[in-house]
Image 1 (tube, rainbow, N blue to C red):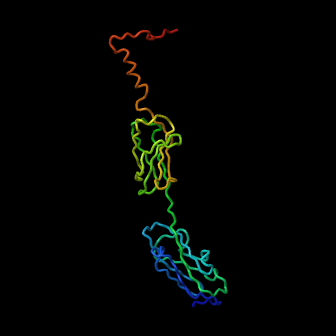
Image 2: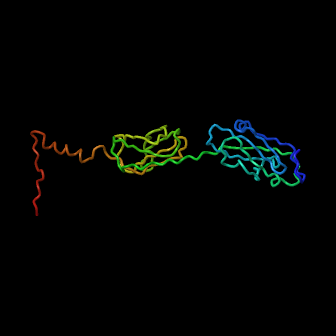
Image 3: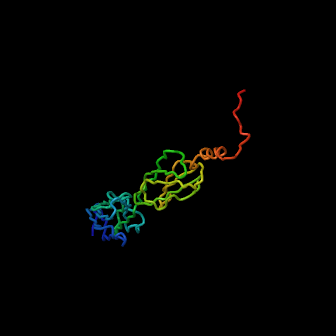
Length: 241
């Protein structure tokens, strides 16, 4: 038994870890100096950048609330590693006349890594012709993630430009010649596994392959090149007033 000077007794220390946790927590050992309990443990995980939320519970309240009077390696931002240590101020946590057995449990969960937000780089132009290549870039997201690239017009999805594309932060898109001309087009890039993470370009226009005026000029000249045809009533130069 371990006794406090004022009679508080902690009779048995039983540190319980679930089967899933046992693969990650090792060397879970307590020590007692008469006033405080020091708990040492190793938190093993293959990804050294993964953070964990670590908390400790006691059987004195049926593991209802996490222990409060703690200092050391506990909380929401604990990285894996050896030699983790928590000190529990038992006297300030338990009643003065407490004399029951106490079991201590450690609980931990992964903290979801913050995902860098995607950000589209501005296009160099605000309009592009059909059949031309548009090179665009973006930033953010992990390199191993998959990206979906879509074309929107007036807020509605027109087509999927690319699906399952590696997050290389760059893409070259050839505008289909059958794509209808118009304004209000937007490129949207989203994380294939988390569509809430996305970025959009500024609006741009898609124009015809060849300007309309350029197409009509050769047609206008045909009236003068066809042999045997007589063109009448062509407007002449206007007389000045």
